[in-house]
Length: 271
Image 1 (cartoon, rainbow, N blue to C red):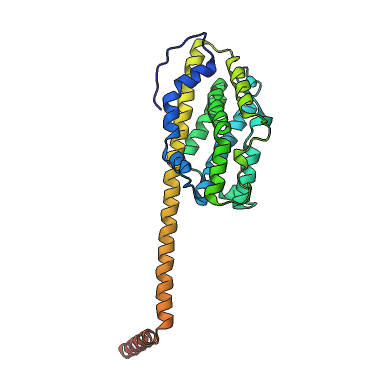
Image 2: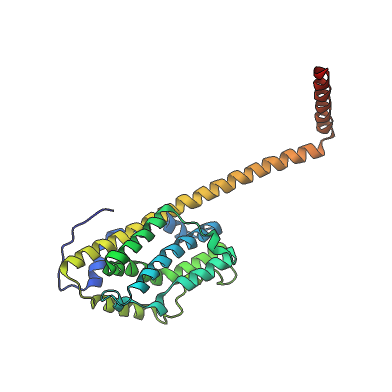
C-alpha cells in the first residue's frame, strides 16, 4: 500500500487529523464501482449475499482483535461492543439467506483475506492501530447504514427487513450523538508523535483495503454472473435439443435408423 508523509499539528484532535488525512481516499472509496451500483439501485441478491460474506469475515476478525485488546490504553476508549458489534447482525442475515449451514457456504475474495490478515497482524503487533480500522468501518457503516439499508431493500424487492440486520444499530439511539461521543473518545487517546503518524497512515491503508475488497467483490460477482449465464445458456440449448427430439417423429426415426444401421455394420465387421 502507498505510504504518504503527514505534516502533524500536535494540538489538533486525532479525529480531525484522520478526517483530513483520509479525505481524498474517502472520495475514492465512495466512487468505487460497487458504490455506484448501490447508488443506482443495481445491487442483486447474489451480489448482496457475497457482500455479506466479505463483511462477516472482516468484522469477525476486527471484533476478535478488539476483544483481545479491549484493555489496551488506545483501544479501551473506543471499545463499544454493545453499541457497535456487527457479528450477531451478520450471522442473522447470513442464516436468513443461506440457511442454518451458512458457515459452510461463506466464500470470500483474496482481497478480503488480505484485509483480515492485516487486522490480525495489527492486533498482535500494534493494537493501537486497530483504532484506525474501527473508526473507518464502524463510523462509515453507522453513517450510511440507514440509507444503504433502504436501497438494498428496494433493490432486492424485500417485503420486510429480514436479511438487512447489518444496517441497523439497535444499541445506538442517535447516530449523530454517538458519533460525537466516539470522536471525543478517539481524541482522548494518548499517542506519541510517531505513533500518531503511523496511525494516520493506517487509516489511509484501511480505506485502501476496503477499496480493494470492493473491487474484488465486483470481480467475484461478475464471475458468478458469467458462470450463471453460461449455465443458463447451456440449459436452454439442452432443453431446446431435448424438445426438438421429443416433438419430431422424423428426427426420432432418423436417429433410430442410424443406430440400427450402425449395429448391423458392426455385426458384419465382426463376422
